[in-house]
Image (cartoon, rainbow, N blue to C red):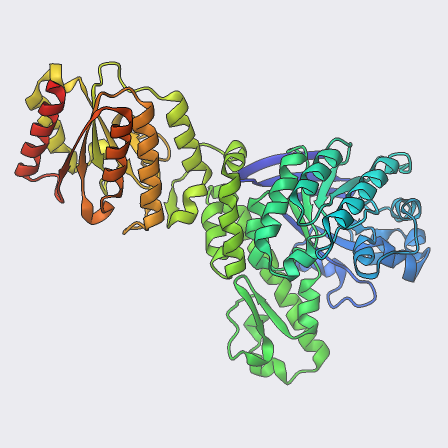
Length: 541
């Protein structure tokens, strides 16, 4: 197998996955094909919509069509000349409790029909199971995974090793470690469908990240049943490279119209908020008078256009280094998705490990949800582990951030430079200047042009959680750095007294002097006089 990563952001990546039927680009959505009830012909999915691969169910094919897919080959049977993937029947085990075929029979069938990507017959965990029952599914899946390598006979099929454990994260971690130690080409998160049906995207996020930490990072991860475009972005950001959807057809059958922000029922609509080829030629009113089958095909094709458009937005966001902003935008379409985004802070160091530290553009910081961004984590970790102030520094002069960046070139800093000249070189060398800024915390002047300290924009006024975060980072910085005193300029209109109180607390605990000067305009003459007096007081001690 060849999986080449071309671009990445957060845990999302644009990659090239080589199969025996051709190379496909990730992130990739497999539309689910049901040969018995298929509103959009498979080849049309590729020729018109641009889907490079489809997925079907090997168990259903074997049960309903027996040897016909074997005799014709899967691609000819489906009339699709792109890449194909087969599920094994595990979902049917989840629904019905068992299937009448053994893993040996399913594996042989998947090989005989010539699929490109195939899945072993694992045992799904499910949502409403006890931990003891979940342990059984994990153990049986591991047993089957090991046995599988004695069953397969072809080397040109990419095999998927599912990770089980459900909502029991310790079992997911153990399963991922075990499955990751076996030579599978691709991994999948098993049993997510019921989690998503219950809108527990927060649990799903923890499941994905736990699995991702256990499997080799270079292997693609598939998310079964991730059918709605509202959650594609967060799935990709958390490390899912592949996912499948039957929702485009199921929703169409129920008269449901997908958008990237949610779903509407066609009979309740007056306008189509979409310019896809189908919506551009119809209105809800004209569509409703058409036969039911025509409406179903219309909705299925519209839903597919929405899905492919969202995938393209995600890929462009990865290329631009703006995937976080895209995820935040989608997360605010539903409280359950926002709950999932909040879980990312528990894994921010893992995200930082694999996300680029430098990008071609800056970023927008909206509120405290963005504190988990890898760029922020990266800076704060490096500041406390790799940075040392100038050896002559005795007093930290801590200033509030300016609107202009880089901070040391802002017009407001002209008076500060004049003040240092008044103090003279001997005293000025003992003063080290830094700003406290959102969302990074303390930024020394000599670092403020380092990415992304001057390459970001933050929403003002700041929310309290962000101010509290800056205060916490200020405490950590003062405690760790070898200053003998701190002089701070505070602007209560922006920062209240949170950062000043934090700095005072850190100095008290460290046993060093602290002085604060309050001002709203850094350029006022009286302010500079007060600041000069405070500095001279500190430097004379």
